Amino acid sequence: MWLKTLKLKLLIEVLLMADAIFLALSVLTIGSAIAALELRSLIYGSIALMGTLGGVAGFFLLLDSPFVAMFQLAVYVGSIAVLILFTVMLVKRELIFKKIEDKRRKFAGIALMLVFMVGLGAVIMDSGIKSVTTDEPAVDFRDIGADFLTYYWPALILMALILAGSVTGALVLARREDVESEQRTD
Amino acid sequence: MSNELIDFVIVSIALLGIGIYGLSVKRNAIRMLFAIEIVINAANLNMVAFGRFLPHSGGQTLALFSIAIAAAEVAVGLSLIIVAYRMYQNIDIADYRSLKG
Image 1: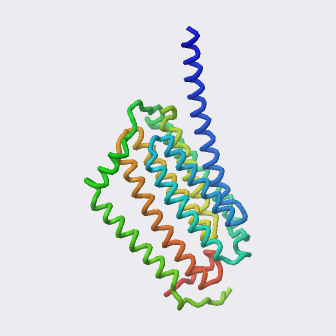
Image 2: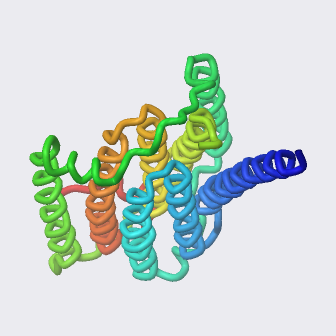
Image 3: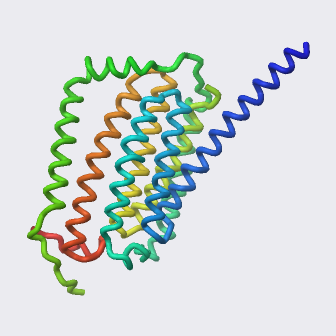
């Protein structure tokens, strides 16, 4: 009897723990997304963006897709965030700490955000996905590899070409020497 | 799975709203890139969540494609920002109005 109650207690604790992890991840992700946009310094902003990307990787882990989570960590947190950080460092110091935004648009932007969230939330809540749960096992990552190599192989090759082309284009653009600075006219 | 699909979708909607707010209010080119990243991550989260609850491997496959294409997009976007910054000595997109040639 007491074993059963202990098991029940453990189950409840595990459920609460999962919920706590989910809540912590949501707070981390959404809070650092807001911080990335609102912090005065662009450097701290890009570090906060790293927090958002890492939080989304945590959500991927919660969704039983560790392969995508590792990919997210490697590509986003490992390369994109560092790339953004180095680009920020190329910018003049006073521009990094200057807040450039439309004061008049601020409240309109917040209103647009709320309308979007409430509207989409209402639509989603009203649809049938509110009570969707699953007991089925997660997708094995071998299936993803099989997908890539069978059905999606043209897309994979196209993606490789796009990556190579875009990286070459980025290098060519960033290395241009003939771009001279133009005086501001206004 | 202790969480339901709706939890992840709500987080994704919140991220999408924040990204739209950033895109409409900020005039700093790099910050607009941050906002685009946040929107793309909301989309990826949605894809993986729906793929988990179907369950189908297509969601994760599409999310992997999306992450790779987003990496290419960020590389090109940052180099464009660097070129425009060299030209105008500023990252305010209001100054980029006369971009030509």
